[in-house]
Image (cartoon, rainbow, N blue to C red):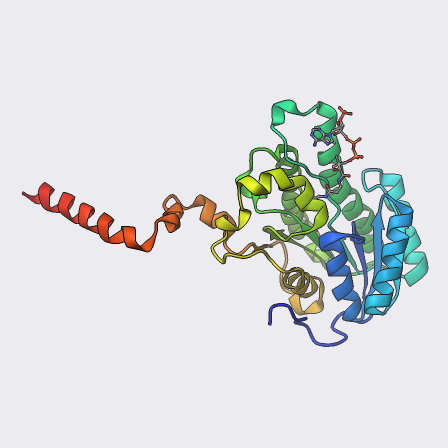
Length: 294
Ligand code: COA
């Protein structure tokens, strides 16, 4: 059931949606579903041949019209060019999905300052560049708009070994909430999704390299005991960019099977205690209680 599309046919008809990093991984899955729901989609990434190929494949798989554009979201001029090219093709852009990201695991003291810049620039600068370029247009032309940013649960808990990403995603979440308050009056909504582990080639090869995956299974931290399916994320994203969520503004929706709360609850690791052991533990606890009463 959760592998199926959720919204009704043509739920996004008439909308043009720009998805940064839309050629691969989560961005591609969201783009595909937006197309199936009748939207025009613009996908952008740094490598033109890759994005053109992805645009062609997406159009074949899902129908609709896809425009593939090359853009380094870190560079404001390139972002403006991308936005203008999209408007030239489709007449307007209604929705921005800040999905492009860069990340890899590393002890922070091993990173060069340039490595930190690289991740922060792609994630934070890239997201505010795109949001600013489109927001200026929407406000100047009195057009409604929606921005959906893909963040992460460690945007608010923080996380070791991905510190540049944590700093940048926290900034994207702060931008989402701040601009939701400021631009709401202009008919512009900003929301975010915080996904837990959704296996995609790009993220998993950098976050759970094969050697690490052998040592620790990320699934053991997920109460629901499984990874997310791409369609589940696409369903949530489609809802948040559609007019069905017109009154949702400034929020972040977590979709992680309960993973981050599991990590935070002091006794949640007790789920590793085998059933048989609970009889023994109960007896030990009860006898301590009894002794303290005597
Ligand atoms: N450990 C430590 N430093 C690393 C590193 C690693 N695994 N990978 C890259 N760096 C450093 C580089 O050495 C360089 O620093 P230096 O100039 O001091 O040597 C800096 O980071 C930039 O690397 P470079 O390869 O030039 O950057 P890039 O812009 O081509 O690549 C990345 C960006 C590193 C984020 C790359 O992983 C990427 O393009 N990812 C995109 C997709 C992605 O990350 N998806 C997952 C999202 S969850």
